[in-house]
Length: 284
Image (tube, rainbow, N blue to C red; front, side, top):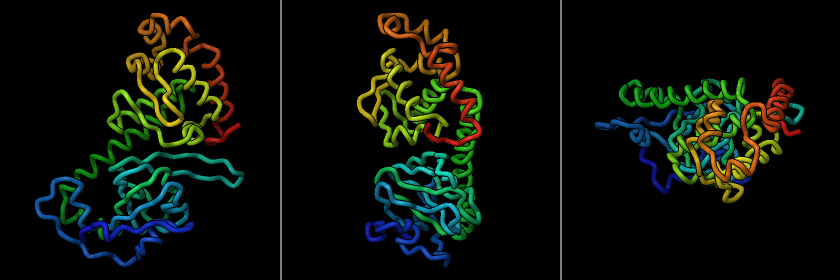
């Protein structure tokens, strides 16, 4: 079916997107896309729904009857533990898919952290559509392969990188995913970033302030930064502190100590990482 403005369902109260849009478990009719060569062909079998900022899309434990594609906005997936701790699993940008990895039930909750438009697909309808249109399945496979690579890189970041290296890697990774060059908007809060990277809010704030002081970034406000020296940031993200130091030779480099392995802030991040590794993403 074709999704137009009349198909948009606005969220009300604490209902999820799937509930509010009236998505039922009955499979929707599949429209065969003529000469479709990219993922936009999937819109023919989807229903366009909207989630306001803070609205729940689905909750952990819900049956996974639908798959969602982010059309605009930003979605956060997370897991809340019984003692109140929270782990932010991922952030989903336009053209990312939600729910593909949950064939029976959702393991994480999903929430819009900005006004978001989603395309919802009945799972069985999507599976049947991909059988009939294998070239679209290939495009979807390539997209998911990139996301899997991102997840593997994040496992490395959390397992081996210092606090500063993780934050810089996160900023560069978000910029690459959004196609941002000089300016990067960050709709998520610093608490979201901290819970995603297994750090405290205080550490995230200190590292961003130090990156600003050293001239690597310019913090425009709480939700936006401007890249000043991406070469030095890339070196720092890869643990090549000496290269970043050499590249930043100049007045800005002399005003503040380096965010390099062995620095006070770096050691603090390492200690925090070791102390907090058994716990996922809480704030001290």
